[in-house]
Picture 1: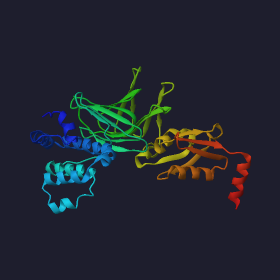
Picture 2: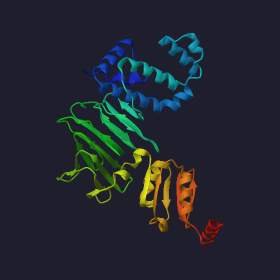
Picture 3: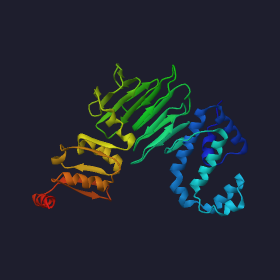
Picture 4: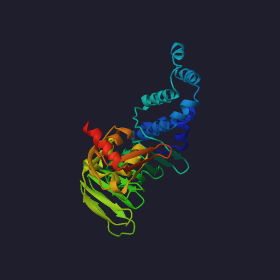
Length: 346
């Protein structure tokens, strides 16, 4: 059965009437997909509004109202003054979860256009979030990415639009393909795991198949490309040409584990990925653009990463412009180079 889409936003804002709450709970009890979808929206809404709510909340008053609503004792109320509004929201979600036996997945919620049923999920610098789509498909969204889909007609056509990068683990549904639309190409799949990288500023877009089978259609081409596990579809954003390559799944999926792998890569090749990770634009001097490295970046801060580079690259220096969010990597003068060598020999 369908549900009034206005209920989603009213639920997020805690504005449902008793009758609307009963209808929503009945809808949630129909199947697990309904539960996963709604509670994903709930988690993302909490994440987005947490900092704002934390500043504006009259926590003690909110806790009192909430405790009275759910029947907590006065003793519990008096000890609840240190609870944040986020806890209150979460507690309300837990109570409803207990009613329907649902499950939540963390993500960032950017917006819900109720009249058109459009859902937009968007991540910022350094953020990775996971969401569950209405059909149970799991999506892990990388930093600086945007995923949009419509609730209207979802049961007939599973379509999402991606700007950025995401890993899709698609639920197989016979005779109902799943589509990922990007700026330059579309991916069609019945059920599989694959990574799509489609950042507008990157020199290339890449679709890498982990298992299953996908079909890729490029705008202006009458021939589709099929990938086998381990293959990557590589689209040149400058020329509009593409080819199929064998790329390391370890490297492609490294971001899933919050890693950046240098396996003979240069800073120039990795600068966009580094920018999304640290939130700083990287400007590499021409003399250093071809210098390659072998390393794995995990939990290092920006300063730790640059200091490590500096220690193994004597001819390199750097400066961080905090106000403009720019890292300038440049060559050092002969005098500085001699000083670096002297320190290294001490």
